[in-house]
Image 1 (cartoon, rainbow, N blue to C red):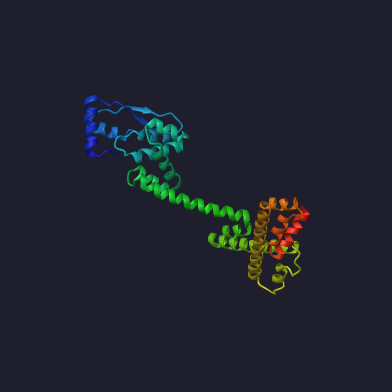
Image 2 (spheres, rainbow, N blue to C red):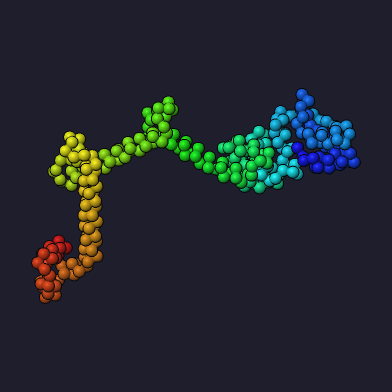
Length: 289
C-alpha cells in the first residue's frame, strides 16, 4: 500500500480527474490489481470502476502490474519481475527490456528467487536489499552445488557409500573421506604394480614389492616408498642416458671426420690425447661408422 500522504494525493487526483485506470477483479470477484485506487476512491467518495481478468494466470498478472509501481525501488522491481517470469514462462531478457530493468539486477533477483526464496519475499516487500540477498543466495548456491558434486561423486565411484548416506548411516563428509582413502589406496597399489612391471621388464630378479607387502615382509606404505624411489632412479637414468646420447649425436661429425682419415697423423694426435676409456670408445665409434 501507499503511505497515507501518497494515498491522499491519489484520492485528490481521482476526485479531480476521475479514475483513469480500472480496478481488476478475477472471475470470482477477488481483487487482483488496484487496492490503492480502491481505497482512494473510498476516500474521495468516487464510485470505483471495475474490469474482470479472464486470463489463466492471475498471479503473473498481479506481479507484472506491480513492477511499474513508482514507490518500488529497483531491487523490488527486479524481484517482482523475476517472480512474474517464473509464473508466466517469459524470458528474463524479454521482461528486462519491457520494464527497462538491468539484466544484471534481474539475473541477481532470479538467483535469490531460486536459492533463497524466503529472502526473495523480503526483497519484494522492501525489507531486505537485493544486493545483500544476492550475496547470500550466491553462497547458498555454491554450497548446494558443492553438496551435489559430492553426492554425484559418491554415486559414480562408491554406490555403497552413497547408499549409507541416503540411509543416514554415514555423513556425506565421512563418506567422501572414506572414498578418498579408498582411491589413495588404489593409487598406491597401482603405482607399486607399475613399478614391479618395469622392474621385471628391466631384468631385475628381486621379489616384486607387491608380493613382499602381501606376505607382510614390508608394509604397503614401505612398498610404495620403494616404488617411488625406484621410479625416480629409473627416470634419472633415462634422462641422463638421453642427454649423453644427445651430446654424442651433436658430436657425430667429429667421429665421421676421424673415420674418413684412418691412420693419419691428425687422427693419431686426437686419439692419443684422450684418456684410455674415451680413446677406446672413440676407436669403436670410428670402426662402427
